[in-house]
Length: 55
Image 1: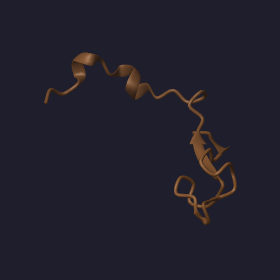
Image 2: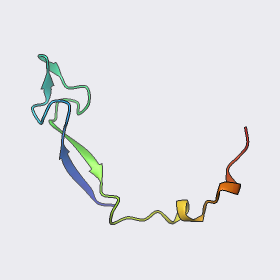
Image 3: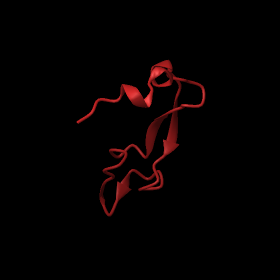
Image 4: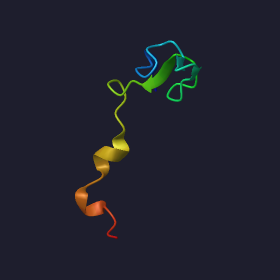
């Protein structure tokens, strides 16, 4: 699983919004994003619409 850091869009990488810690990134200024392009989850490939439970 590849994780890359992406600049937080809410605080633009500053880590703070309005004098408070940014709620989106927790004051880090970035968020960890899983790189889905390189990882394919075979579990979802096996699922079909008929496998969904009915509520």
